[in-house]
Image (cartoon, rainbow, N blue to C red; front, side, top):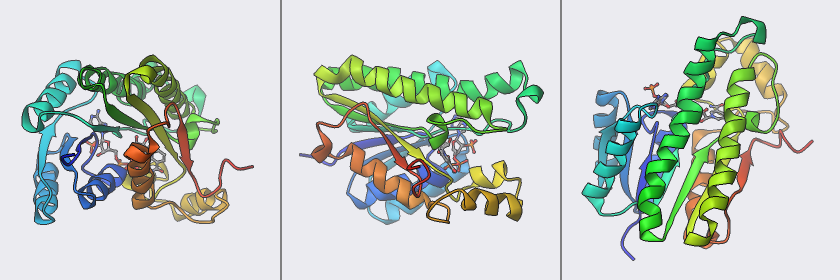
Length: 249
Ligand SMILES: NC(=O)c1ccc[n+]([C@@H]2O[C@H](COP(=O)([O-])OP(=O)(O)OC[C@H]3O[C@@H](n4cnc5c(N)ncnc54)[C@H](OP(=O)(O)O)[C@@H]3O)[C@@H](O)[C@H]2O)c1
C-alpha cells in the first residue's frame, strides 16, 4: 500500500504541529492547514527536510467554502484522503458564565463545533467514496466533565464528543472510522493563553493532574497516530483520554 495521505487542521502550532511530525516519521504524505501562511511555509520546509511529501493549504475551519477547497486540494494533490485530524480549536474567552455573551459563545462554537462539523462533512464525502478512512477529532477532557470559568469551551468540546460518536455510528458499516482524543492540560500556546502566563495558574492546573505534570504535544500526537493506524480497524466511536490520570477518579 502507498504511504497514507494525512490532513491536519490547526497544524501550524502545538498538538497539530507535533502530529504532523509524528505522521511524517511514519512516512505519511501530508496536507497541513492553518491560517498563518508564513508559519505554514516554514512547517512545509521543515517537514520536507525530513523527506516528507507535504503541502500547506490555508483554511479557516469556520467557513464551508474554505474547508471544501482544503479537502479538494488535498485530493487533487495526492489522489485520496486516508486520515484526517480535526485539531483546529480555540479556548474562546474563559471567565464566569455570567460574563459570557452571544459573541463569546459564537466565537468558540464556530471554530470548535462548526469547524469540526464542516471538516467531517467534506472529509467523509471523500472517505465514503473510497470506502475507507479514519478521522480523529481533537476534543478535551473538558468534553467529558464540567469546569468552573470555562463553560463555553467545555460545552463546545462536549459537542465535539457528540459529533464524533454520531458520525462514527453513521458511517460504521462503510469502512470509515471516527474517533477522538481528549487531552488534559498540554504545554502549548493554548494553555499559556488560558492561564494568562501566570505560573500560579499553571501550577494549579498541574496539581489537579495525578501525574503532576502537563502533557506534551508529542504524547497527544502519538495517541492520534495510534487511533488512525490500520491495526485499530475495529475501533470507532471512541474518545481516548490522554490526561495523566485526570479522569480516573
Ligand atoms: N493545550 C491544551 O491544554 C489542550 C487540552 C485539551 C484540548 N486541546 C485542544 O487541542 C487542539 C490544539 O490546541 P493546542 O493546544 O495545540 O493549541 P494551539 O497551539 O493554540 O493550536 C490551535 C490551532 O488551531 C488553529 N485555529 C484556531 N482557530 C482556527 C480556525 N478558525 N481555523 C483554522 N485554524 C484555527 C490555531 O491557529 P491560529 O494561530 O490561526 O489561531 C492554532 O494553530 C485544540 O482543539 C484544543 O482545544 C488543547
